[in-house]
Amino acid sequence: MRYEIILTPSAREHLRRLGAHTRVAVRDALEVHLRYEPTKLSRSRIKRLRDLAQPQYRLRVGEIRVFYDVTEARVEVLAILSKPEVVEWLRERGRPL
Image (cartoon, rainbow, N blue to C red; front, side, top):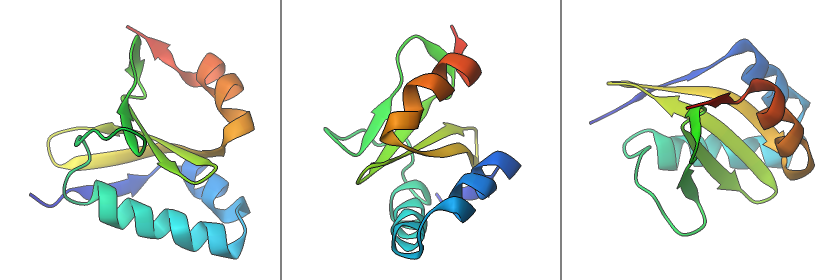
């Protein structure tokens, strides 16, 4: 099944701020990992976030973390952050179960 990938306005802004090489790597990872199997867990790449209702998943792309939710046919990318920004963002924007 092919999922529609939607970037929120804040995720678009985060992506725009990345360097060109990193931005290309993130876009490629979104296409490869989230287009067809966004819920397929792996040891290091895709994780289901525990104790959070939102975001549901995290995709690792080198030092970048992509946080997203999955609905029936959509992947909504909420944030694209560097590793040091993650804790603060999750504290502010993460919604506990």
